[in-house]
Image (cartoon, rainbow, N blue to C red):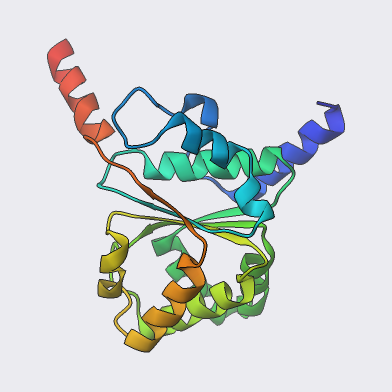
Length: 202
């Protein structure tokens, strides 16, 4: 890669605001995560972004959902795509703050225009009607123009627990699920495993 390409990648990675540094090279395929090498290679090809497809990653806590979503984002940046990573709680905070300081439309525009938008940890708490409306508006504008990745501990069929309004739920799911890649990760929590290793070592 040329110096200029490296600089561009650095800028894109910085702009994405990932919580963890992740890469496909370090995705653990030895653990029984219900994730195959073929699936990972498909994701690495970035074909889903070219086709404006979404990715829904579900599974229990600690199985590497955030890491996988970040690795997807990292790969997107390396391929020259813009990306934005947002934990759902941070998304909710940013919506509220942007309305107070007058930057809401700018935030909304940035989230609509990014090639890859990652929402991490949907389902920690129910979404208020205002947040549901904003989420719908963003997804509606992105529909068939950009790709969205969502991670959640809740199975997809349980997302209505987070989006109480039935009409909004149907509309959001319609935008998200159409042609989406669904990954259901399984296995024991890495954090629990790490605890076991620490205990055995001590």
